[in-house]
Length: 98
Image (cartoon, rainbow, N blue to C red; front, side):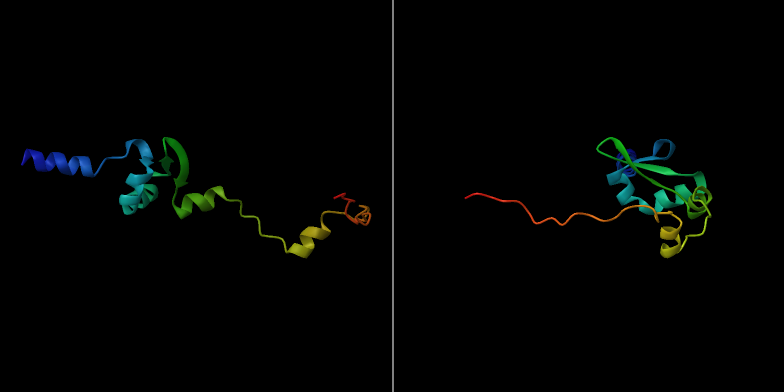
């Protein structure tokens, strides 16, 4: 029985403080999501470097500004580009000798 418990322990590594290796996060994705919802953001590393953070939607919405999106035309008008010269010279290519 001792060997079975040891095998189970090696197959299901515990994430220290919300950090996961990519391969562990892939195998235990449901656990990563559960941890993110219950204990806060979970970091996933690729080749030893932090790559992404998985967080609950509530945490994401808290961090994302609630500013409504401006329609594109209104955004462009608000740039105040009326005095900007957008004319350009005609480009006819360059002469190439063969």
